[in-house]
Image (tube, rainbow, N blue to C red; front, side, top):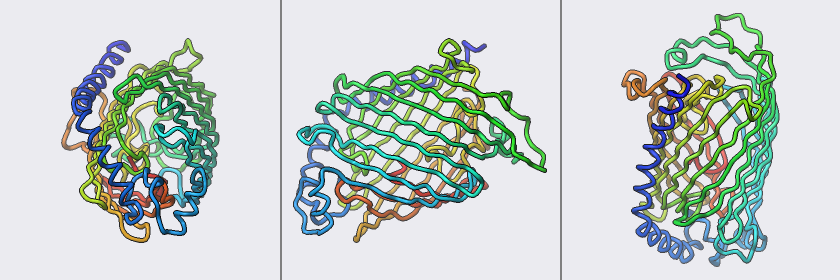
Amino acid sequence: MAQRRRYKAFRITLLLVMFFLHWSLTNVNAQSREISVNKQSVVQDSGANGAASGTESEATTKSGEADKESSHRGSIVVAPLPISSSAIGTGLVPILGYIFPFNKNDKESPPSTIGAAGLITNNGSRGFGVGAQLFLKQDSYEITVGYVHGNLNYNLYGVGFIAGQQGLKLPLQQSGQLFRGEVLRRVGWKIFIGPRFLYGSSILTVRPSNEQTPPPPSDLGVQTNLTALGFRVVRDTRPNRFYPTTGTKVDFTSEFFAKALGSKFSYQSYKFYFDKYWSLSRTQVLAYDLFVCNTGGDPPFYGNCIYGASNELRGYTAGQYLDRHMFATQLEYRLSLPKKFGLAGFGGVGEVFPGESQLFRSNQLLPGVGGGPRYQLSSKYHLNLRADFAKGRGSWTWSMGVGEAF
């Protein structure tokens, strides 16, 4: 049974990956010409256009702030973000980041990023994290590392669509740490591939509740270690990853958790992303996102596909709907306004489901719609602070973040 589940999960993901990689590769020449033209136009217009992409640092500008930024090697981003989440409460997420070229003589690699963030909310959730994403050797290598530590107080609704609809909540506290790292190597056609590693440990405890609750998870009160090896394949033709105006990104990740590696649970996780961007004018962008998640083996409940997490989709409490399989697709319109401001509107639909035969059940689809303002934190890289108000099926969310949702 476990082998059958692993095979089904891998088959669903593999079919999607092959289709979109084929589509993307057959359009590589057209996209390369489009990106080249876009970069030239950005350099010409960046002094007048607040919506220019990351190459605008090459242009001359009369703005005092832009002159100040160009005198530094990189750009510092500081953002104390308020958070209001139905999952973990209301509080603050202070963020400190630095965007910079790893080697100032390297004109091919995208800018690298290092940063740190914290978390404090009124329901007792606390945490901090540090991370880095480095691009090296004429865009030949990409290294990503991250570490988080803390405790999250949230509710478990159960697994599956019906459990999410019932609204029964089990208040949990999960305390622990997580480390993830990967090294990617470019192999041609803008394709990067490489290994990844994950290690995490946590303890689940129940918080007091006077209401009826769903059944508790099996690993309650026991320290759980999770260790995984995996790989990632990504192809990215976006000229600016902070504010894409054209190009595509195709991203496939896999992680294999095994008891032989020291993991308490043995299961497999496959995730596939496809993003495409169209420049409608100098100030307007249309962005499309597709996300597919599949899980095989015997995962803990938080190892399943979680609807509402990582902006897939906005409008839902992360964790209310979770299952072995999931898809989410959305379209977003982005408009740049004067004085560094902007607006965005988005809509999408998705679903969680236990197996292939339950896919596309119209009465269990989970739509979401919303929008919100934007403000440019860095003119050099067009990095936005965003606030999103979103309405889902019987729920709504308000969130803030640095960078676009996808």
